[in-house]
Length: 502
Picture 1 (cartoon, rainbow, N blue to C red):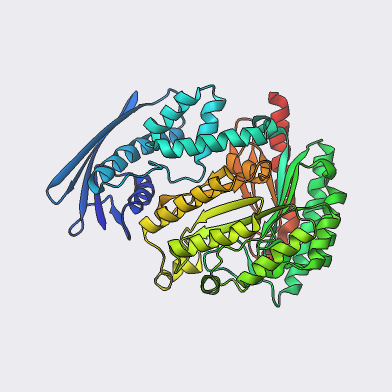
Picture 2: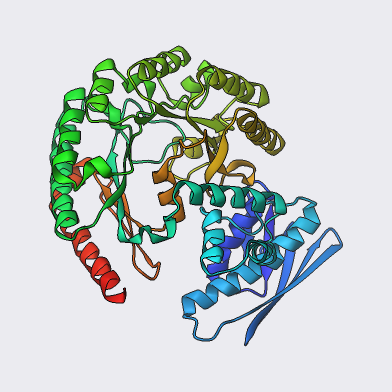
């Protein structure tokens, strides 16, 4: 599909318009330049910027014409970046409207292609808007449907019940500890994850750097009397390392971090069933860690083989039962909608198998074609379900979770996500992951430690400073001291500022 845009010369419009077009069409090409060849769709924009931004779009296709108009006040004193965001959203508003009219397809998330819809609702409520006014703002500004707004509100209500002091947690931090190793690399994955076989030298060096980061950060937290809300071990797969290495890692946590006994939640994403052993579960139990993930992704063996997961369906079930027998009383499982070769029947089978285990929480992901993944690089090899089937599978998941006592408690979206849907975390009562709430709603600083770990430093004004450790183990091993010192410098700046503004 070739779409020619007339009247918008700023190249910053190209990417957001491309993302919205991809919601409607496969393999879209957008041009803001002079028309090259025969366009399938032409859209003429008229954009006027003064005290308000006024935008009109007229779409022409096959002698049919569709028109939309939108205006939005421009607040005084906006920085150029903030002003362009208002203009960009106004352009997206009319663009989506004419595409919906033309295709007769309704995008339930409106113009949103970003990751955190619920953050918008939290922000409006924090500003003092009533629920009704906040909902109307989501509808008018972003064209989000009532169905998705109701889902957002249910999640926000649940989050505030689980973490009543959510808006006051900026004075604390959460910690993400990344272990960048897995048994194999999954086809859809873009996380920093290296096959662990033959890399023991890299593992040893990496763990030395990680222990250093933990000690230095722990010193800073103790000196500045900053509490930890949650700790999350992710990756990769944190249980790829040996039981002895895990034991030393958790010992370092208890030695270095302040008041570990009162951290609200510690999670280890055991993820890959083929990494779970009785010895490793014993180590978790020794250090009072009982929240883990055991992720099947699918209960169809052919699917697991196609995506590069070398465990069996039977192994998933056996390792779940083993974890339960050894005292893991808060287990999360992940399922993915839209994996290659899977349709409604296969997803229903995964739900039926999940019913036999009843984990405390279940995250239902929708497959996203991430740019750096094997699946995206070789897209023709991976046949996925149609848009209609993807929506039907999501509806199945929503119905199944409701019938079995699970409620949604966090949500995020990804670019290039199938069916323009979402990823939703469901849980049984009082079994929600506080870390997942913190990472999605961005109410506090999250410090990333380890290879490829990303930090999000959030100051008193809500400004976010992203900082990432190197993804490659060798680069990390060569520079972990430098990166640790840089993070501590940012922490000093943020928390000193927070103290001064209180």
